[in-house]
Every structure is written in structure tokens, then in C-alpha cells.
Image 1 (cartoon, rainbow, N blue to C red):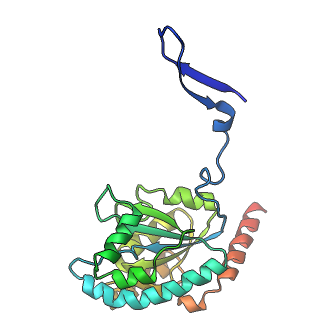
Image 2 (cartoon, rainbow, N blue to C red; image 1 turned 180 degrees about the vertical axis):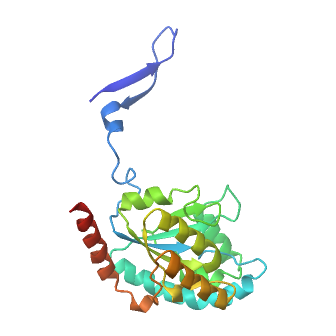
Image 3 (cartoon, rainbow, N blue to C red; image 1 turned 90 degrees about the vertical axis):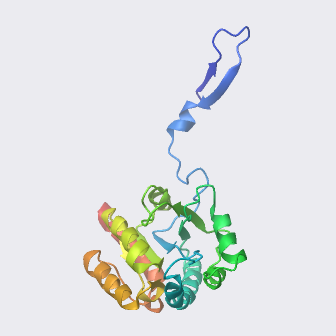
Amino acid sequence: MTVIGFALKGAADTWPLFYFDREAMSKKSSDLHGNAPDHSKVALLLLDVINDLEFEGGDLLAEHALPAAKKIASLKSRARLAGIPTIYVNDNFGKWRSDFKQVLAHVIEDETRGRPIAELLRPDAEDYFVLKPKHSGFFFTSLDLLLRHLGSEILILVGWAGDMCILFTASDAHMRDYDLVIPGDCVASQDAEENERVLKFMQRVQEADIRPSIELDLKQLQRQSAKHASEARA
């Protein structure tokens, strides 16, 4: 072990300011220093599901999002059984002093329009969280780094709005060579017809699988990703 110290120059006694282990620092962390202990070729991303929906058009979005939230809750339970981690990718409502727990507390405790959905999709202790500043979950966030450490290759995107944050996140994921699964019954927008058009667009342009969530074989997705990995190594 190589230890290097730095001291205050000119001090009567040499007081070390800090030490670090050069060999330890040169090693790559395989689990983000314990913060990403899971390993899964598939990851489930919940986009903006913890949302107060207190904005113009929020009532329309809530109308479509509540049925989708019930589908998402079922999908999340199945994902847990299949060993697929869940990542909440959420707006911080422009409050850079807030964290995800504060966002959740606001939506539920302040009796907002989004409360029924947040109660359905309340995160579990083992879930991951990423706060985003803009539409895409990748834009100036740690999402890509987290996914790389998890070893994820296939992303299941659910949430809202389909024509905004889902679309932008899917575009960035596609450019980063992730395979996309975007179950149509787990995505909502203010306008149902526009939501359907966007789903078709993501299917055509970003090669997304938009089958309903009930048709997804999550264990098969895991095996499919493992097969792709072995073919790439061959």
C-alpha cells in the first residue's frame, strides 16, 4: 500500500492535512463504492411518476396517468421478482435544495393532484433515485453512470409524459446504444392520441418494443440481454 500525505508548509510541526492510498484510488469501483450493489442486464426506469401534477393540463395527464400507474405498479412487482432493479428518474420541480424524499413528501402530504399515483408507486428501500433538471433522464445526471455500473443494456421506460420526458429520455438512451422497451399501457400524456403517435414514433425510429406490459416476459428479457452480450464477445 502506498500512502501519500500532504502537510502545511513552514509549520513548526508537520501536521498532515490528508492521506490517500494511491493503489486503492487507482482501482475502479465496481459498485459505485457500495451505492449500486445490484447487477442486472435489464433496468426499469420510472420517469416523473412522483409528480404533483399541479400545472396547466395536469388534470388531463392525471386522468390518463392513474390507469397507467396501476399497470406500472404491477410491472414493478414482477420486475422485483425477476431481479430487475427500479430507478426513479424524477424532476425536482426546480428546487435545487430538495431531495427525492422531499419531493415525495410534497406530493403526498400536501394532498396534490398526483397524490393517488404517488401512493400507488411509492418507492421501496432498495430502489434507486436520480433527480433530473430537464426533460431527458440523461441530461446532466448520473443516470448513465449508474446504468453502466449496474451492467444494464435493456431499459424499460415507463411514466409520463410520453410526448416529453419519455421521448427525450428514449432518444438519449437510443444514442447511447441501450435497447428500449416502452410498454404502451405504462406511458401517459395529456392527449391520448398524441401519446399513441409518440409510441409509434419511438417504435419506428428508436426500435422500441411497445407491447403492453402484460405481454413482457421479464426473465426472457434478462436471457435475451445475456445472449447479446455473449454474441458481442464472440
